[in-house]
Structure formats: structure tokens, C-alpha cells
Image (tube, rainbow, N blue to C red; front, side, top):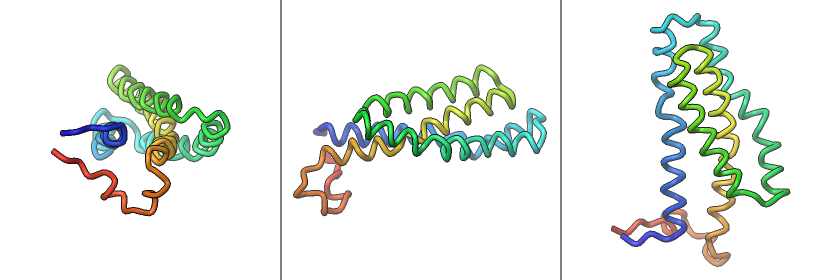
Length: 138
């Protein structure tokens, strides 16, 4: 299998988003099982969306202004890892609340993945279908 920069980045993005969402279906049942109040569960779940909403525009502007998309991607991946660590180490509602804050921060940085990926595609190929550009040959 021949891997170039584009394909490696694409695979990294897949693993990044997998890490972001793998726990979602189990979060509410788990928090209920450890007897977290339903109102606090709502706050925990909402924290993820609120943090993205608040952070997405400033993070995107900063990344464009400084042209530091690779650094933003690294911070996003580290934030996703920190989110998981908080959920594991502080195995309660507070740990999940802090974890969702970090997950929201990580998800707010998704645009840098797309900007960097598009920089790898030649101008003449930008109108082609993404599937044609990403075909993984094994």
C-alpha cells in the first residue's frame, strides 16, 4: 500500500474523529448508572456543544491569522486525548464535564484538518470528487 501525505492525513482524521465520538452512545447510560443526576447529565452533554459554539470562530480566526493549522490540529488531538484521560481518571460527573469541555475544544479545531488537507490538492484537481483524490490502493 502506497501512502502519501494526503492519505496519512486522511487516516489520522478518521482516527481523530473516531476518538471524539466512540464514547457518545455510552455516556448518558454510564452517567445514569453511576447515579449522576439527570439535570447534571444534561449540563455535561450540553457542555460539548456550547464549548464548540464559543470556541470555533476564535480558533478558526487564530489559525487563519497565524497560519498555524498544523499546530491547531496537534492541540485538537491533544485535547481529545486529555478529554479521554479526564473521563478515565475522574470517573464521575465532573470528570465527564471537563472531558466534554476538552472534546468541544478538540472539535472546534476540525476546520484546520480540512484547510490543511485542501492545501495538499493541486488547483487543477480541486473540482474532482473527493473519492477520486483519496482512493486508497492496497
